[in-house]
Length: 203
Length: 125
Image (cartoon, rainbow over all chains, first blue to last red; front, side, top):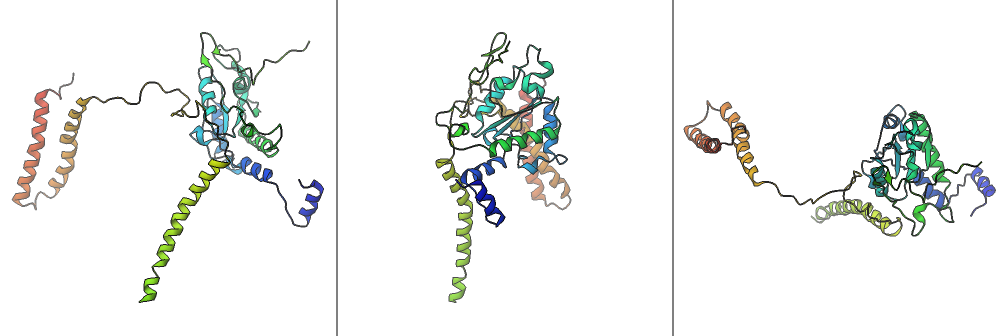
């Protein structure tokens, strides 16, 4: 590894150095392909973000793919009903590694205004790992762009070796998460305990 | 003589480059998928459909053979129209032989219509 000070010294002289890791992450971060997948009104904002006024293409993320096998970013845009939750998880499972999830809007984060509803999932993070969450109801397209920039920052800072390396580089790490089934009153199981635990209240 | 023969090698070279241009990225993609990409197959990922729903039943379904009637009626009403239009346009300049041939053709199709009519296919049930 090259020393950070030497690196900036070299850069002043016009010599640029890089590492394989940085090149790999740079490529990954600037070619995030989202899945064409909207659940509710947040999807309208997502569409607006990809169109000419907000122009998501500036971040290399305009190629919305209609097939999960070609996408690597799932924007959970909208209310996840309990009927839709297994489908969301199954689509996530079908995406190729490395894959990321943005929970867009209050509904995808926690159920939002429908949190008390009997048929609304109280946050998609109960079943799939969420990388970036955007609050808002619905969030403006700028917020989605900010989320994608945040995700890019996250990808750029990922180490490819060591214990914090991305999941797809861990041998034996699962790429599929259990798909919930429709139960009598709720989804079975109501959450994936491996990635989500109910918050503990400290008294 | 010899130079004109040799000049065709440029086309061969162009073909080789074209094939390499087409196969090169495919080979690179194959090599990348084979050696570098994290290959993590699973039950959901290997599923045929990508709509999020699980597929039900068998894809090998049989169609009813009665649909041949629709094929015949389609031929009578649709294909006949296509042939009738140019026939009507050039009707004035046609020799007698062509006219008779067209009439035989029409007769064959109308025969099919009469057959279908008598079979009761045209009656709405």
